[in-house]
Structure formats: structure tokens, C-alpha cells
Amino acid sequence: MLDDRKAAILRAVVECHIKTAQPVSSAYVAQLGDLSVSPATVRNEMAVLEQDGYLFQPTRAPAGADRQGLRFFVDSLSGPAPLGAPQAELVRMFFARAHGEIERMLAETSGLLSSVTDYAAVVVARARPSRAGSGPCSW
Image (cartoon, rainbow, N blue to C red; front, top):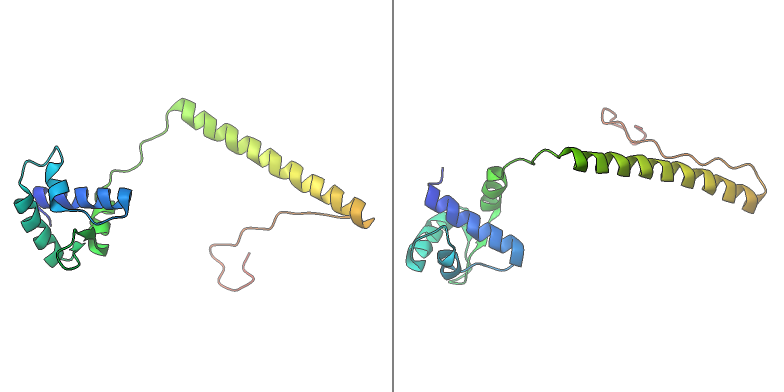
């Protein structure tokens, strides 16, 4: 388990790495407002995080988050906040409209195929694969 300072340093490295896709220097981490430590202290903590598998640091370049560090970061995120009533209604309206548009598009596609080929045409949406199915034809 990481102590609070190491967790804060790791979180800062991961957040910056996600935003910039670049390695993160100890000087940058030390400048962050919620850490009141020197770049040397951050470097020492980052070295420990590297030894423990949370960070990688090619040569003496700035560090980037390793797989274990990213896993720690993701696990420490809080869950999603519930939607408010107005946002939930917007989502309901979107899917109700989208469903109607899909049905209308399928009907129009059927009519187009029928008029182009001079044959009867039926267009159906593909069934979703069953989660319980195990074969190539499990629908």
C-alpha cells in the first residue's frame, strides 16, 4: 500500500502523463499546489515508486506511469456521479429519438431496395449475439 505522499505523487504523474502523453519531471510534480515538498524529495519518492513497479524511468529522463501505476490510479478514481433529472431526461429523449430514426431508416431502406430491384424487400436489424452462447452462430 502506498502512503499519502507517494499516492499523491503517483496521481500527479499519471494525470499529467494522461493529459500530455509525455514523461513527467519531478520538478513539475513538486510545483503542484497540494504537494509541499522539494523536487529532490519527489525524485526520491519517484525512485521508490519505480522500484515498486508503479513508474518507469528510462535512464534519468522524466518518469511515466507503468501498468501497475495506471492500475492504482484507475482503482483510486471515484465512481460516476448520478445524473440529475434534466440530464437523465436528455438521455431518455436522445435514445427515444434515435430508436425512431433507426426504425424509419430500415423502412426507407426496404422501400429503396424494392424500388431498385422490382422485388419485395425486407430489411431487419441484425440480432445481438447472446452472452450465454458459445458458438460462431450464437445469436
